[in-house]
Length: 154
Image 1 (tube, rainbow, N blue to C red):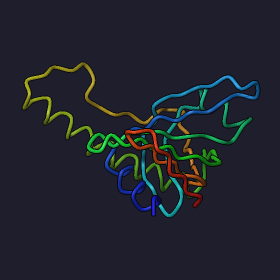
Image 2: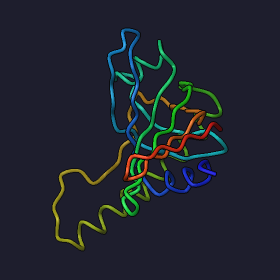
Image 3: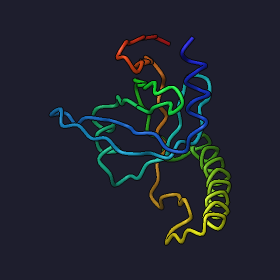
Image 4: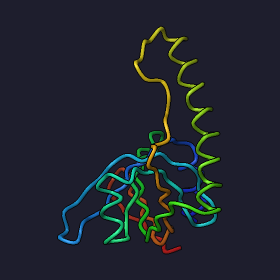
């Protein structure tokens, strides 16, 4: 079952690419901070000033893509997206974002020191005007290195 495989692969990363389209079909793809995967939902953080947010307000569907670097297998997750900007669910996700940000920031600083790298920005920051993107996994597509597709409806 692809759904469980996707959940494990997603939780091993901090960012994924989210593709949306405006009503005229103009595409937009941008990296987003991945907070968590729970049941059949993917929670991401976005700015309320970007194209992804604008597109989802008028066309509430998106596609997430990423690759498993070990197997060179690509994945696409498609489904409807809810914008959550306040309330108990929003507050719960923001608390989780802050925990994940702290962990990721410490990890980046330690790795930077170990490698002797100097970075101008080690911190992963929560946008001041942030919104939670709650995407329902409706369809998962696995793309093998040979181009073979496997589709699964969830």
